[in-house]
Image (tube, rainbow, N blue to C red; front, side):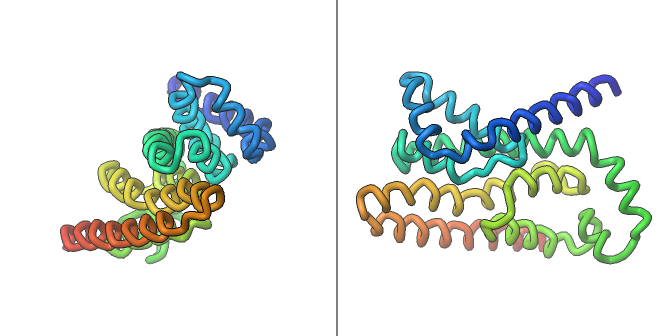
Length: 213
């Protein structure tokens, strides 16, 4: 109980710091220069910043990811982004699962209907997983918000991990190759990477859903 209280205070502190630093995390030039200052340690700093932005909820993904692409290049920037975002999302999920899942489920019991049962992952699990992927692929819903929300449901951790891993790939690829497109006017790489990622997503999603049948 004391540990939960500690992590709850820690999470509130991280979110508060994120709100204070929000103007800096939306400034592309500041982020780029900040990463360049650390030279040999810039990769580690970038991963830590990605983890921080995931847990702090309100910091947007795009400026930091594009800044990372400008500093490290599209491919290496994508790899570092994946590492940071995957760790950050999993931390957000674990925080939410341990701190808020029980209280959320108790509140949702007051509204016991088909929608809430699907929301809590009790019915139509195959469609539930498809809905989660749609949230990720939409590009409009924050990855952090999805992770925190899923932590309050009954979804198994391994399914969350797989779905989140698939779900973040398209947006991170596009964000990392946007800089290459604007700097070098090279749209062939962008088109290739989008086409490849879409094909990969179709294969992975199909394999995942057929496995569940």
